[in-house]
Image 1 (cartoon, one colour):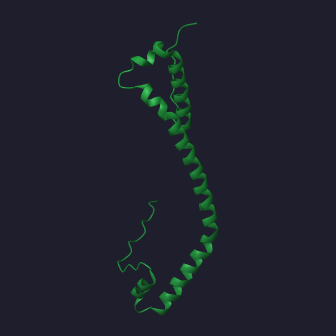
Image 2: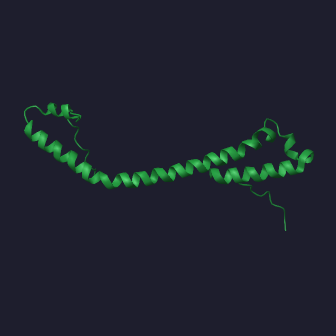
Length: 125
């Protein structure tokens, strides 16, 4: 069986990178003065290594916030159909009451554009 060059992939997932970095730093620390990583140019594991737990804790905190954010969006979305219906019905009523001057809807917070709407592009057959 011949020797292969082998591919050594670095994960793309942040948590996997942090887990791998923890393993590398642990092995580097265990090897002490015999670690080949001491010869790295421009990378000092003595500086980088201690930052890994902080980065991992911040990542986990961000994941918790992401979960909370998703839950908040789900809860918010329960209210949106009724709110959107109320806004559209109000717009329609106010527009009917202000047919001669629809710009008055701006007083209610609506954005009123009096520019001509561009025609929708037609599909080529």
